[in-house]
Length: 235
Image (cartoon, rainbow, N blue to C red; front, side, top):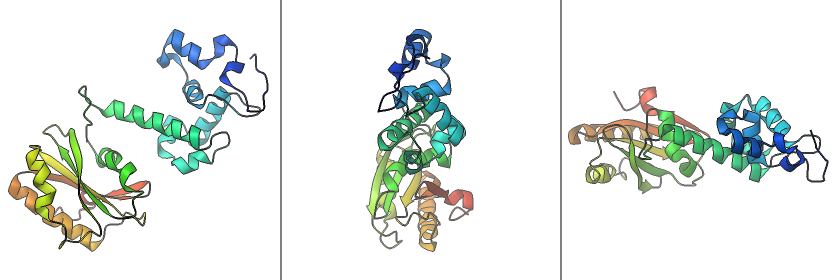
């Protein structure tokens, strides 16, 4: 293999030139590389006893393949031997970028086709917040994301949430539909009775304005709940 040991672990440059993932990608194209080789390029180096490709193989085996890299949390990935914050961040960023690219339209707009798509558009911003933040995703007639707006921050309450504020930007953007989302700072996404009441009021207002409310998501820590899927507020 042409490897040599160093204090920082095995590097990609310790591999024979013909076996280095970056060189193979340049000459053969990314589709020709194995999953482990693609992960190795992101890692850049291995650990004592394992080169970057071998480390990539081990990580993929532990998380059950590329899809597992998406499912596992950043904190759990950091704890894996040979990773740490920097490498874990590179892996999570690459997975997320690939996922967004696969879902995007040619003009770059994100397609929202499921609660998971909608959650992915906002959860990275919402779940770390210490206050509840109420967001509205504005969608066009093809369910492509126009933009996301924050309409309220604080404890969710029907007396404080003004339904008109929810739809103001939707009307301005000529949105065909909206998805509403807010976070629970506790990390538990279980909908409260107040969440259901707010949902019901907004859905009814949407019908009057001819703007469909497709869902209301409650975002927790690395999880979310769809009120529509649960049948809360959409009856």
